[in-house]
Length: 235
Image (cartoon, rainbow, N blue to C red; front, side, top):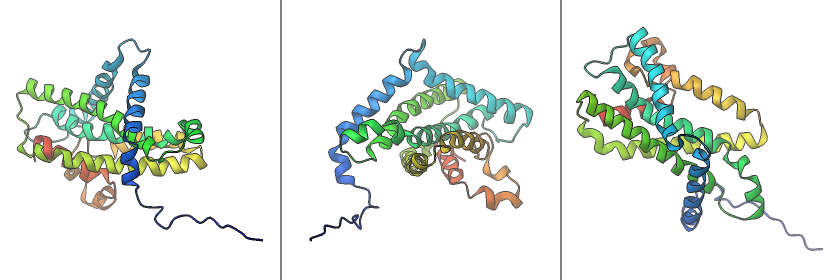
């Protein structure tokens, strides 16, 4: 009796770039669908993309800018904070959405074939719309304070790509764990809330005491958030 043995491809860990390109239309359709669903049947619709980050900004500014009074040099603390919040908000959204995306799309996965990375990548595209909304708020804030953005802003796309890669990596990893251990659906929001305060959003990385710097720098978002801030307001 002949036996057929099916073995996984040795290149299974490689990202199927060509295949993903072939499914680019599906990525766009899923991203547009997610965007419509996100703000469907809400009273103020897309305005929530502005309200959520601004509310977070007010909390961080009150705690670190008014109560703790962290030093931000000549840069107003509210501008300093929003420059860091731009990157963090996008990362947190990407990790959260991509983290449970596979479970949410289980029915579709069972019916048709497509690269599984299509789903988290579509979440990244949807998150870019919210990222753009926060960026608009930031430039309006710069105009209000008559604060000129840094010439380093030309490097913003590079750091944005790095945030996307980091967020997708975290989201895909969490998605794999969530399909096996559903508890991660409850753990991830807690970790993201903790991570917001463990990341230099409303304070600078230099303000962290030297004895904690090694542990602090293990956070991959430290360099990315500081880099985004450097792009926008210099340093």
